[in-house]
Image 1 (cartoon, rainbow, N blue to C red):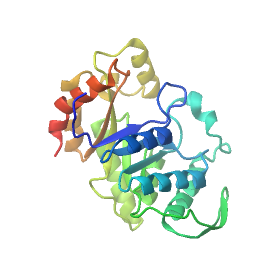
Image 2: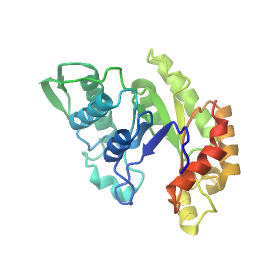
Image 3: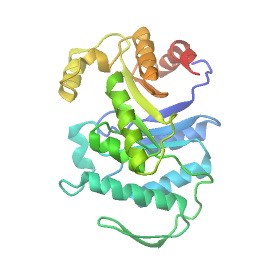
Length: 270
């Protein structure tokens, strides 16, 4: 793999695949590099201990300042993994909101007392806090998720959406943020773009149709580098400026994929 100026490396929360667990992968990548930023996209927050998660993020940020990019979500992508992050029935959104509020306070205050419905800490501090505030982006694309991003998030990392849906989502987030007296940085709208290198397998088409029966699978997963470039340009036109690009099936050589990514897509970077 040739040296290339890739901005960041992202680890996905997928418990039942060979992928690396996000916090483990982030620590390894940070230790092996000097400038590379690393992200968790998406780390599931409800069902995870927010105090431990805050300590992990603070520790990584202390070891590698300004190179940690946390993105959190409400539940795993795969329904089969939902039970691995247990929360009271019907309360996943409420648990997420409270966990996020506690997480933010722990990462920014030296001493925290918090009494919530689901979490309680008394005069609790993490020790060394991040030298600069960590931006915490949120995933999701439902109306509730978009409103939550406007109220509680620093940015949006969407996925499995069309450019039209991205445009509508940005509009909702900005409107709701205005109502909440907040502002989301216009450079903080991103997309996880899954692409296929050599066509969609029947199993992939079936999975995409099950997840989004209302959308043509080809609109959600471009096939080949030309289609990926076209998709990125379409999303840029509606306000998406950050992209996490990854192959639908791990290539035989990750190095060859990164080299091709740098050659085919990085010239689009501005």
